[in-house]
Image (cartoon, rainbow, N blue to C red):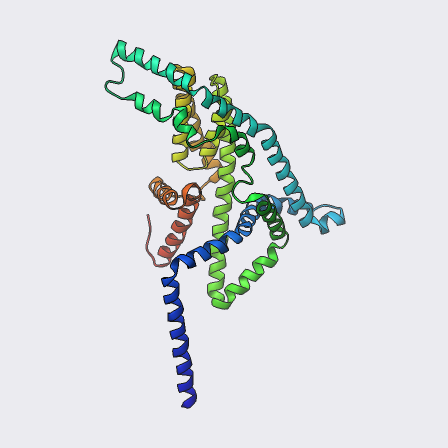
Length: 373
């Protein structure tokens, strides 16, 4: 009896201590949040390394499977290391090529566009003034205000043109620094080399808190989430590359002055479902109007609409298939919430997250004999 009473007092003591700690944490919430951010900042290379390893795991896994079929014993035995080395070598070559050739060209085009923007705006104003005098075009619409909002003066407030080329070429190291990026690459390599070991540790940790049945169900859910995320990421990146190249070619055929810059922008914005294509199209049409006149802007508008329809009805479905089988209203809701809460990264990841939530809710409802439309 005394033993039970003693254990009860120990429990009360631990509970009281926990309450005091929670109270102090709430009382010093600013310091707690600052501490959390500091820890997350220190772990940033691990987050970047995990993301890089996750993206490269697909091609590395396929290459490893091919190497295991080799007749050479050394290649079969070292298939994991060779595949990781080849994938990172290919990544290095691709990144070096982009930084060496494409980034300076895009940077030069952007700088040239900003420097000549006043001349383009004045020409567009004169064109619209002429139409307004002859046909009462645009009525009372104040297009002067619109042009002033995109003047070089307003843009220079946000961009230092003298450092533009440095910003563009330093895109890899701008957020985390050279050391953090190098450390993230090393971490990602070890993650790919020892992925089975890491997965086994994760399973053991989950096994501490979950029964065998729940463990199997959890791993099944994680496997489905992995499939959805992997397919979405590769599909989006491939789709963006295809649309970027096609847009650049189409804009060059339309004789748009900054075809490479606009094609790159369209491909990049295409990573954001629905809204990205609309925003990129609007920017391309505006730039075409400023640099080539209204007829060129119309050609560009029609061309990009055709390309986007091809992407939406042929390219996109072929790449993604039915993996993200969600309605447009859910996509818009996901992008709105994701973008509002987490910015561009949230807009990009919100759609697969919504697809995962829908799949989980649908499965739960089916288990409960209820259908979710």
